[in-house]
Image (tube, rainbow, N blue to C red; front, side):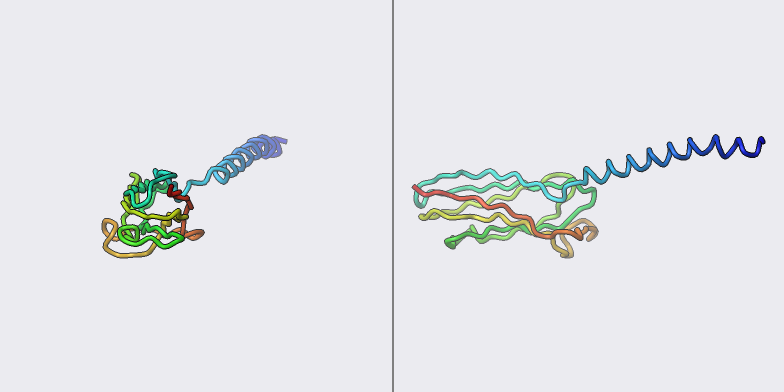
Length: 145
């Protein structure tokens, strides 16, 4: 009789442990870390040929570093410093990019950040490239009036 009591006592405890682990696992799946967060500081309106500053702050919730390349695209095309591409190592601390440019026409501007595999950017060349998405972007409109 004693040999049957031990499995019966362990059974409810084991079921409780499995239930707790399952709930914890589901909770972890609900709140995955965000690979990329954007904070864009950019005016919606400007005068023709007025210098406009676009400020992009990028950060990650990942624990690993990534090599990121940021650039702008527009329609219609904007020339000059607008076309600068910046490459940086993004780790725990946010990275900020700045573009100063002028235009005389209303334009849709895409702010694009690519996660790339490039050497000599991060310390000791240790960086990751996520499996899911390598390109993140947001689109804003600059109205000229």
